[in-house]
Amino acid sequence: MSNEFIWPVRVYYEDTDSGGVVYHSNYLNFMERARTEWLRSLQLEQDDIIRKYDIMFVVRSLSIDYIKPALFNDALIVKSTIQKLGRASLTFEQFIMRHNDEEILTRGLVKVASLNVTKKRPAAMPKAVYNQFVSL
Amino acid sequence: MSNEFIWPVRVYYEDTDSGGVVYHSNYLNFMERARTEWLRSLQLEQDDIIRKYDIMFVVRSLSIDYIKPALFNDALIVKSTIQKLGRASLTFEQFIMRHNDEEILTRGLVKVASLNVTKKRPAAMPKAVYNQFVSL
Amino acid sequence: MSNEFIWPVRVYYEDTDSGGVVYHSNYLNFMERARTEWLRSLQLEQDDIIRKYDIMFVVRSLSIDYIKPALFNDALIVKSTIQKLGRASLTFEQFIMRHNDEEILTRGLVKVASLNVTKKRPAAMPKAVYNQFVSL
Amino acid sequence: MSNEFIWPVRVYYEDTDSGGVVYHSNYLNFMERARTEWLRSLQLEQDDIIRKYDIMFVVRSLSIDYIKPALFNDALIVKSTIQKLGRASLTFEQFIMRHNDEEILTRGLVKVASLNVTKKRPAAMPKAVYNQFVSL
Image (cartoon, rainbow over all chains, first blue to last red):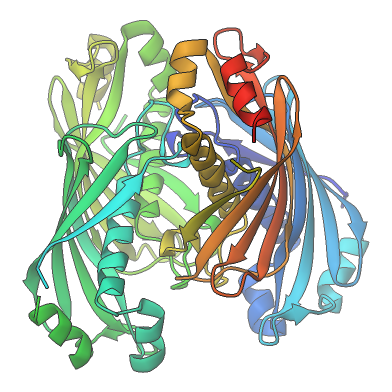
């Protein structure tokens, strides 16, 4: 296993705006798809985690630099690494790049926290989940 | 009271696509905002209805004609009427028009059903809600 | 080649709403992704078509039945066929199904028209494009 | 005039996700609506600025803290100030609050750059626009 995960994303009309480029908040959606698929690749399904542990992941903070725009029909990849791992949170660094030339379009840092769903309060992530991240 | 409800909508970048116009599915969002605000104007808050009656409204079917496109920055209005009222469903006719010249941009028919949230099955709407619609 | 095209779609948080299901207008986005990918599978890239022929496809009308809801994390497929082919328009029938059991969740009919981009008027689609559809 | 602008936003189903709260990237949309309306309140229409000056505003970078979630039906306000004004960029600080108790839900910093549309390069904003911001 490796602390890097690549996920492909295609740009459709729904993602663009009348400036002719991907609308700025939609890059965050691409980044979340990549995080979800990374978890899935580790056998961590978020709906299962909620049912089993009453724990969900929520975005606590993020920063993003928009370097070059993505365009309609672009084939993109999201390259993610975990930069910091705590008991109740983890921080992803995520780059969105064009697939063909690996030109970097955006760079983001996303801090995700684990939350007890019932109590709506921060809570340590389940051991089984945490251990998966440690072993990357 | 009257069986017609007007709700203004402004077009932002988020609503448009790289074709330079409002993305086709986003008109449905405008139409739902208008239905929500009509209910609110009748003192019917959908989160209250769920809590009190375990009933929610869901879209069952819809059809829409795209006649002219709406553009970035357009001031629009959504004009809604109830075309058909049943015990467990109602059908809205909704026009999206430009505010300044009332040019019709889209015309939609949206059938909304009331649903028992726990059982996830069709259910008659609460009497208090139904009576509000009857009295329009 | 065949007059049927299957495209997989995964449901992410961005697609759902607080009712716990996919938000009703987002199914239309899934359907458009499938149409775009069908065109791509025929070597028809929509940005190329605009550049070469000054022609774009726009949604003219649609109807959709919401039969069962899709949920967070669902693996879906969109099954599309062309129901009617004209010189300047085509009508797709599109089913969204769960991948595992092929349960039908929505059924839609989408009429797409070809448009001269500069004149913003209906126009026959390019012969090369039309012939691709005829030969399916 | 004043270096503060308040804009109301209502949360609709389209804004929420199956976690029961506003989806994290949609707060950015609310913040952009507020920036657009602030410009409009200064008689600065972004489509006019493109046509007259060949200049548009794009988001260059942003950071956001998610403090408390917004829920379906919440009446929110976006409170914006300009934190830094340059010739070719400006940085907004934007708080999203509940309307009734002014509880802060998110805090964001958004750096917006002015861009020559034709050359797709950074460019000083038009004097008439810049002077509006200076005079706040």
